[in-house]
Each structure stands twice: as structure tokens, then as C-alpha cells.
Image 1 (cartoon, rainbow, N blue to C red):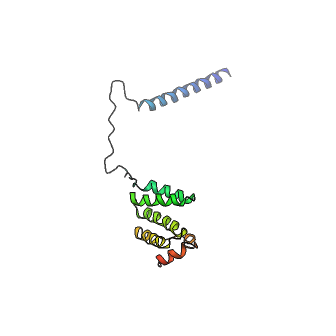
Image 2: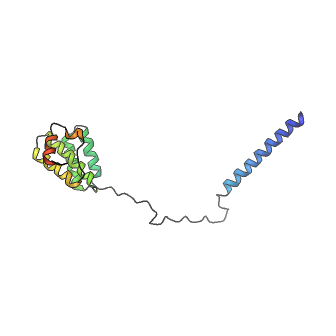
Image 3: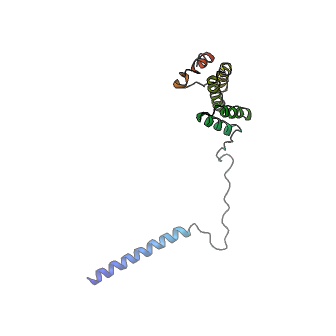
Length: 152
């Protein structure tokens, strides 16, 4: 009996040593020997580098304007949305979005001509611009939208 238990503990110790040796070999394979120089990592070539997106200057103002609008601060939202357009938005849908929120502000403050122009500017910025069904059904800007853009 004693020899079976002794044999089992020696087998366990041997397995532990083998596992430790394998682990050490795996880790040391990544190490640089003392005195040797690590190979320099090459920079990715220009054609393999991911394209970096450069934010347009007006994007922060657009985001702030939309947040102000959603928070009910319409005068401040109008200022930020106009600023976003002056600073520049790089993609048509962003410009259309700025014009859309300006149209909403203009219509709700009874500036129908500006509302109409803003909807037209939104479509000009993004030919695919349309209001959602809920937005188009709004009693204040829905009729102006349908008149400004009769064939959305």
C-alpha cells in the first residue's frame, strides 16, 4: 500500500516538474537573451494603416446644439447649430441634421420662411434627407416640411 501512495506522489511531482518546464520554455521563448538587442518592430506600411477619421470643426457644436434642443434650450441650440454650419460639417447627413433641428426651432418660434428654407437646405445637403413619419406628422413643422419638400 505504502509503495502505491509513494508512486502516486512521485508521479504527481514529475507531472508538476514537466508542466513547470513547459511553462518556462513558453515564457522564455519570448524573452531576449541578456546582451542581445530586441528586433525593431517595423511600423505598419501606409497602405495597411487604418484610415484615421478627422473630425470636422463643427461636429462638437452640432452635438451640443442637438443636446441643447433636446433639453428644451432652443435659443442656445439655435446658436450652436448655426455655429456648426459656419465651422463646417464634413458629411451631408450632419449638415442636413443641423438644418433639420434649425427648421424645428424656426417653425416652433413662428418663423415659417426660415423653417421652409432650413428644410430645403437639409435636402440640398443630403439628397436622401427625409423626416421620420412621426416628425413629418408634427403639427407645427409637418405642413411646412410637406410644402418645402413636396416629394420626399
